[in-house]
Length: 280
Image (cartoon, one colour):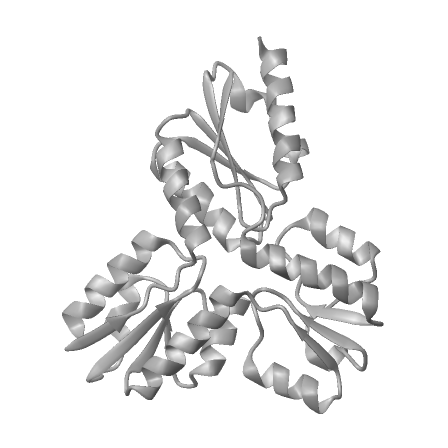
């Protein structure tokens, strides 16, 4: 069985920056806590827990020490509460996420009613909404019908959102509102991986996508591959691979989400090769 790997593998630059800062922080600070897992990858989460990085659900649970802000960022009110509690704050928000906050604030300052395209329950989107109070959040073109009237709307999008889905929403918004100013804030890495997923899926029979089950960008990749006709499997590690997936398969694809380390992709590739040899 031939295994075709996507060109873009391993951590995106935002995750890489976050993990580097996290390594430095746990080595130099006491009682370091993050709100939510440091990254959507169970192996990396376990590694950092071994190094002493604590995970909490709310800043209310953090009584002292250092609050480490992961790549998704945090709502403005959480930063304010952490400061009030006297916590040391190490902000590792991804630059692409910060860009969304800046763009949304600029649009609001120019008089636009803000629309954020994304999952309202995703931590990144919660952070963005906190920068532009009163903004509307939508996920599908069908959500547009319920939006109130406005003279002009400004649109930003979750950094890991589907590019095609965003384009469809902007097109429909343009038919409802007189003026629509949309800023495509999908990050370059996400765009590249999505394009590769669509192309690679047309060249293979089976696509294996490696990444945390809670990773939005990884889920999008697996969904995109499936829409192109490949049997798509979203896994977190090599132990999840099943021999029957590759029976009578001549070509399989392999790619990873932005939170997946390169060494894990290598392990999955080795396991796929072993299963292929066994099948033959």
